[in-house]
Image 1: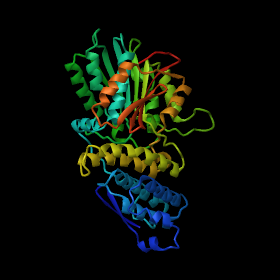
Image 2 (image 1 turned 60 degrees about the vertical axis):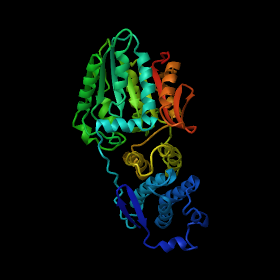
Image 3 (image 1 turned 180 degrees about the horizontal axis):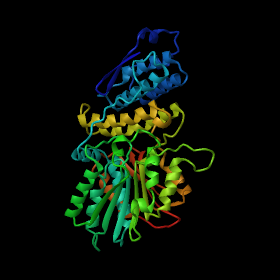
Amino acid sequence: MKTEVRGNATSISLRNPSLFNNPQNSLSGALKGCLGSLDGACIEKLLLHCANALEGNDGTLAQQVMWVLNNVASLVGDPNQRLTSWFLRALISRASKVCPTAMNFDGSSTIQRRQMTVTELAAYVDLIPWHRFGFCASNSAIYKAVEGCSKVHILDLSITHCMQWPTLIDALAKRPEGPPSLKITVPSCRPVVPPLLNVSSEEVGIRLCNFAKFRDVPFEFNVIGDTSSEITCRESSDFVFEALLSHLTPSMLDIRDDEALVINCQNWLRYVSDEQKGSVKDSSPRDVFLRAIEALSPCIVVVVDEDCDLSATSLTARITTCFNYLWIPFDALETFLPKDSCQRMEYESDIGHKIENIIGFEGFQRIERLESGVKLSQRMKNADFSSLPFCEETINELKSLLDEHASGWGMKREEDMLVLTWKGHNSVFATAWVPGGLEGMV
């Protein structure tokens, strides 16, 4: 098989396409009937056939199925076609490791990510409520948790470059009792995943300082860790644990006795490895990380992430879950952006980056290790956190936010979680926690 990359598309040609027409080969007639079909169930079946072939080291069958998928995939087609294009690319990446002599593909991540300006990042975040839902839920919970506090310190663990904080700063500026002094601390090291920004964390801090000054909110911004690591962090599931754990102490974070500590985790915990280290219960880096957070005695911990379980070791299980989950943003974008929209294609390519890592890599190279909101909640409880239910004011704010977007977006409660939905399918969950059995409402 030969692969040729044109922009973000991957075109495929078989060395011997007649293999597909040979009735003696292992590609069933039922699969041949899928050629040209846009049915999601059929595409999923093809993807699983290819995964099984790769796991069985059957390069010939994998090539045949990829040929069929290539005739369905299109980066400018309908949502199923566009999603198929990125799954096909990820499977080719994986296949190049299984059958290197048959593939002209180096197996590394070939999606070139463009760094955005701050203005472009703001438009990116506003495109669909995927990020804004978590921002709104978190900010509302934090605002309530720090009522009456004169000093607030936020440890911000997120991948969106502090985009949620101007809204909170504005809300704090309007507090009846006056704004608190606000300090935000961010780690210098973040996962090398989209969205990427063309300015440093320090520059982001300067912009936030200027905004806070404009709103008369006393403000301080700190970056912990070696600032050079912001560029050099390897794409590894251990990077957060290794780079940040040593800084999770009151002295390293400069936590003062009179500060209300807030810990904000937005799409972050998935990048801390969930693999058990040895036979000791709760010994994964993710569990150790949460225990270190709990030991800081924060007044609130907010955890927001995508509501999907991609922790399975089985490739076929990850494909099934990933395909049926990541259909959501592709379908949502279809509702208001034209097929050839550059903004749409760039957003989808960022999802493609995720798919390539989930499907194309294993071991420390697979850094996308999502777990569902239900699993995360149990993990938090095991780490001695108690959940905080969201109050009606927060619910109303989120409803107002969703009114700004397409009618397919909705929200529901699942125990103490708030869940963003698209056409009834779970997409993002938001949770709030306190350590040591403390109770309340946010």
